[in-house]
Length: 465
Image 1 (spheres, rainbow, N blue to C red):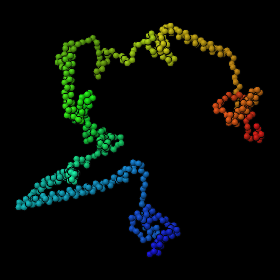
Image 2 (cartoon, helix red, strand yellow):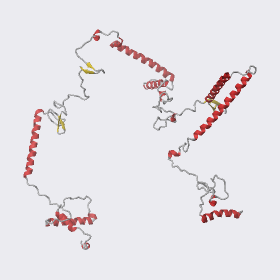
Image 3 (cartoon, rainbow, N blue to C red):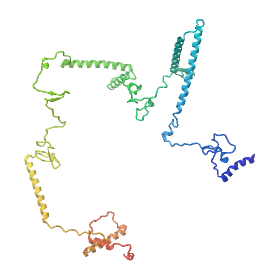
Image 4 (cartoon, rainbow, N blue to C red):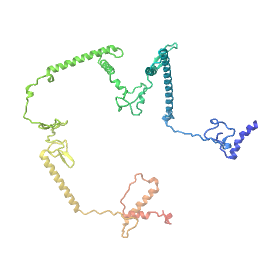
C-alpha cells in the first residue's frame, strides 16, 4: 500500500514533465475549480490523464461594483424568480378554496339527506341557491381570517403572553415607495413622515395619500396650531399661561379671546356704519344719483374701457420734479453735446455749477472760437518750420548695399559698445538684471556687429581674442 500511494503521488509529476499536461486541471477536467469544490462523481483516473469526458469550465463572472453596489441588499436578485413564488401561493390558495368548497358540499348533502330522507330528494334549484350561499360564506370567512391579523406580545412580567390587533395591513404601500425619484418628496425615516405630496401630478380622485401636510392643515390640527400660537403670544405679553402645563386653562383663555375679538370687531363695524352709513342697505337711491347728468361725453368700448372723453393722467415719477438748484431754470440733463450732459439754460457741463445765463453762453462760445484760432495758428507754424533731420537707421538685411557710407567716429563708438556688450555677456557677475532693448539700429551699429561676429566656419576663429 505504501508503494501504491507513493506511485500515485509521483505519477502526476511524471505526466506533467513528459506529457505536458497542466496540473491545474481537476479530476473532471475543468480548470475553474479544484478537487474539493468538484460536484461530479469522483473518477478512478482523472480526465487530465485519460483526456476523455472532460467537463466544461464554469462561467465565472466578475463585477466591479461601486460603494453603493457593494452594499445593495438586492444586488444579484432576479425579479423573474418572484413569479415562481406567486404561482406557488396561488396554487396553494386554489387548493385550499377547492378543499373548503368540497367540505361545504359534503355538509350540504348530509343535511339534505337527513331532512329529505322520507320526503325524497329536494329540487335542484334549492341546492344551487344553498351552494351559492355557502360559497359566499366561505369567501367572507376568508376575508375575516385575513382581517384578524394578530400579534403575540408579552403582557406581564411573569412571562404570560397576549394577543393584540396588528393595525397595519401588509398590502399597503410604504410612503417612500410611492415615488422612487430622488428629487421627489423628502421622507424622514426617523419620524416616518413625508410632508410633501410624493405624486403631485397624479389624479386626485385616484390618490389615497397626498403627504402629511394635508392632515396638518385641515381639521382640528389647524385649531390646535392656533391654540399653541395664542399661548406663546400671551406668554410673551406677560400672562401666566402654558400649553403643556395647564392645557385646560390655555383653551379656556383662547375661547374667551375669540369671544372678545368678535365683540370688538362687531363694535368697530357698528361704529363705522353709524358714522358713515351703509349704502348697500339703502333701498331707495336719491334722485340726484338716478337722474344725474353732465355735459361731458365719454365713449366706451365693448370691454368697458374708456375710448374718448377722459383725459389721460400723466404718470408721475417717484423722484422730485421741477426742482432747480443753483439758480438754474432747467434740470441737469436737458442739454447734450459731444457725449456730455449739461444744463440747457447756461450750457454748462459741470453739475454743481452756478447758472451764468446768457452771459455764460456767450463766454463759452468765445472761448471755443479762441481755442480753434490757436489750433489753426499752431498748425500753420508747424508747416512753415523746416523738417527735422531724420535718424540714420539701418533698413537692410544681411546684404550690404553698394552705396553705403559710414561715419568713422560713429563706427569706432559702435565697436567700443559692441566690445563692452560682449564682455558683459562673458562675465556673468557683471550681467545686469534689468535689460534694456534698443530697437533703433544705425548702419554703424550693424557694421560693428558684423565685424565682431564670430563665424564658426572660420579656421582662424580660435586665434581671435
